[in-house]
Amino acid sequence: METLKMKFKLHALEFEVEGNQDVVKEEFKNFNENILSHIISTVNITANAPTMSPKGVSSVSRGLIELDDTTNAYSETVGNQDYPILKDVKLRDLPKSETEWLLTYAFYGSGFGSKEFTKENLIQLYEETDRKDANRTANLSNNIKSLVTSQYIKSTNATNFIILEKGKNKAADILAGKSVSNPTQRKIKKGGASKSNSEQTSAKEATKTSKGKSSAKTGVNFVDQKFALAEISALKSYYGLKAPKSQNEEVLVFLNWYAEHKNSDGASVEEIMYMFKVVTKNVPNALQQVLINLKGPKSNLIDKDDNNKFNLTSLGAMFVADNLPKS
Picture 1 (cartoon, rainbow, N blue to C red):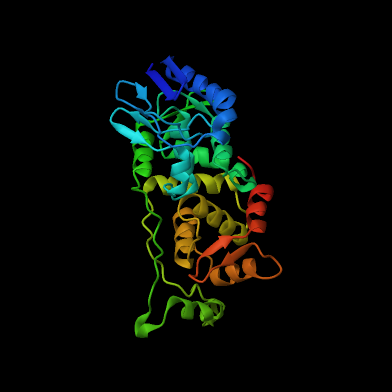
Picture 2 (tube, rainbow, N blue to C red):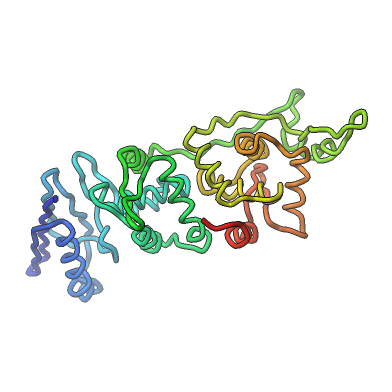
């Protein structure tokens, strides 16, 4: 168990405590709430965040620590690695998907991999970073299962989890700024016509017949998105949990998973087609028409932005959360 020592001095006011890391943090939090909060409005504050040396000893230069209402009010050094406070993680937009955010919470909630954590610990960190909402809460169990499937964390009993070495390394990469959003893949047709032009006629092409047989064209060529095997496995698992019964529901499930795990800006037609292919082995003959129906005024379950990316509306997110089987 790491030992932490904290020493604080501001003119005649002194505070010093040493011992178990969790106990020291709790003592400092009490000191923060019961003493510093009463004088903060009358003192000219100079922020000097404490740091923890590899031996676990923390020191503070003369001045007042920048206060926070959580125990993660400062950065810590674990081994030779210095990790930012969660407030800075949010301001710097380091996690690029909801799954990465959840892994980051698991990393901090486990004391950077030094102890077990629970679902309640993760919810608390959602609240402390002002990121808790109905959609994220509804998808929390599925996202936890995704982390388990990706072998980032594992359960130790019915309520507790630990973060695995692979998860620690991934979290460290996220906090080091090495995570990037999934780039939009845009396809240009010969002759300079953009994908958006082809999409305007693809719905009509999908309904054409040839020699009495229905055409299988979707109006968009298949593009390999090269998901990692762990991502494909997580997508299949999520699909199985939600058990969509129609093409409309399949699209909604894919878009919900994609926004949470790959890119919150949404998915292109090629990316939706790819998810159909790797999960169901088939792509709807009239995928474009399915998207048009879901976007239409009778449904309003999905939306499309200027970059031809599809995403769930609030109604779509509620439909997936409330009407499809819950994990």
